Length: 150
Length: 390
Image 1 (spheres, chains in turn cyan, orange):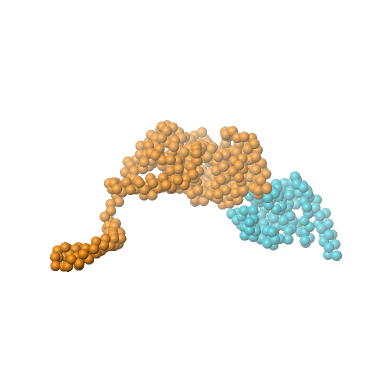
Image 2 (cartoon, each protein chain N blue to C red):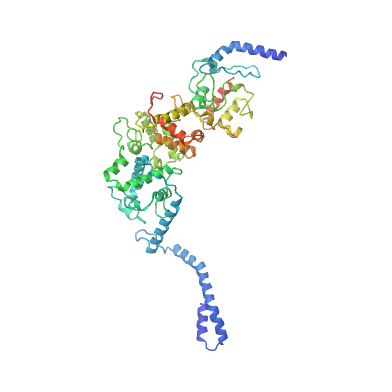
């Protein structure tokens, strides 16, 4: 009981501190996000997401710009960015999921990288094509970006 | 040896009894036949092999085949082409959109042996065995399906090569369409069809290697717009994509008989220069076939939003916008017929090119023929806005 209360208080504090910019970042053209309540108190790292909500297209080579330039946004939505595809899962908060790849991979940066490179190895019949032709460094950058989407 | 002497002995002997004679006469022919068969089965191949080994058979082309050999080879060749062509599914009318590319390929690859309007064949070619036919005279002997069979698979023992690219029946049919035209062409018409646009005038930008450039402009045009609907426009295309495509052709990752010949022997720095040259040309102003607005609108829908219920992502997600991966080609202003053909090749996993081809194949496999026609038509209209400045 007290643990739950602590969690609620923690969430409230976090929302006061970060929530306003977070909502603003999701606003353009999209409905309000259904907040997936994090299992642990989320720690927002220094992600581009919260730094400048009006210009999500940040520096070339960043995780988001690689995500968009390689066409991931044609299938996936990340609210507050150009990515508004509906074929694949909404990734707006993918970094806070308990597991990824239909539950077969832990939610870690390394797992994201492995899934992006060869999704078919983890999820037979997956609709997503493999992106293992991308340089490993770019896959790592995208993985870091996805993990940071809390 | 033994049967012969026995036979002589048998006929010469008058002392032997009639019964013995009858037995011998009955047995002898059978013995001779068996021995001949044994000799034929074992001895003849040995004799032929021996003959070949000591160099008895003349392989020189100067004296021609024996009449019987020539007759047999002709018979076997014509019959085989006729029979195997039965399995070829020929279109009712040949697509003429590939004529300029086919003519350019003919001039580069075929004319040296088969002749061309207004061009004398080399005396060396005329001493080949068999002598390659002058196609302007002989092409009427064959049906479309038979020509397809010959162009695609070549002919053994004649020097006629198979088509240098797998899975490119579209190119082979373009060749057949050109061969049908060939007898009707006078020298000027032929040169106009095969070479027009080879001079890269009208542009002050010259790449490092004009010789190689004329091989490109023969089909893609001096302005880089593509000399027919089936040939891609290169003007204003992304440089990284053009270079990756050239490298893909050179390595065989992307197959095309039309591209295989000119791309052979281009040095890496020349490839980079050519990619830069065509990327810098101003993109198409656009003159295209009349396409119904409904088709274009349906194509626009696919391009901008995809077909989510069939898991087709929006084309624009990768192909529109200057911030996209530079190896993803721009499609706006591209010829519809070319786009259609490439999408179908992607769909059958017959088109490689850049390392990203499988992403496109995945998307194309979810498209119907109608989708492909619509989206190709949509992109073929000239770029309205400067989404991607060249």
